[in-house]
Amino acid sequence: MGTFTTKNIDVLVAKIKNKPKTVTKAAQNTVNRAATFAMRESIKLITRENNLSVAYLAGKMEVSARASRTNLRAKVKAQDRRTLLSRYPFSETSDGVRVSVKRGSSKFIKNAKAIKLRSGNGVGIALRNKDFYRYLKSTVPIKSTKRAAKTAEALIKSVGKPRGWHVLHGASVNQMFTEKRQEIAPQLNRFMTKNFLEEFKRLDK
Image (cartoon, rainbow, N blue to C red; front, side):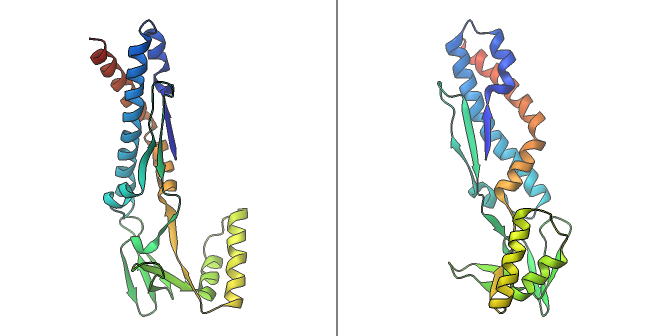
């Protein structure tokens, strides 16, 4: 989730405090437009790097709270659920699945298969529980409590239900948005400054 406030335009606001109502309205409009701008520009950067469509990402993000005169803050909410690998271009072979998450590259997952998901008519890329545990052990380990817990859970399932399926996921839309939101910070600052001045001039007529 991203939160956008008047922090970037506080210096300008301080210079024209003699017109508080106009300043507040201009700031309100600017913050709301900044939230939409940040979401739109982040989607551009995400799709430039990842093989996801603009339509898919736009459907997983929204301006969940808009600024008002008494609360100059807007929020962009993005889906926190991890993204199915089957959302990306993939091809199935006799011994696995090749999936292209990043543009210009692909990864082969040995023993993976495309299976029908229980909920709905969608398809997921999955590994048998025993193969998923091996997959986790073979990838570069991430030293974190969450990763350790995930590996331990996979081990239990690989022993108790080795033929069961584990559907594979990538980063959530929220993770991708948070990363790109940091990248567009300078651009966002310029947008807010320019928009605030334009709004103040328009409202002060």
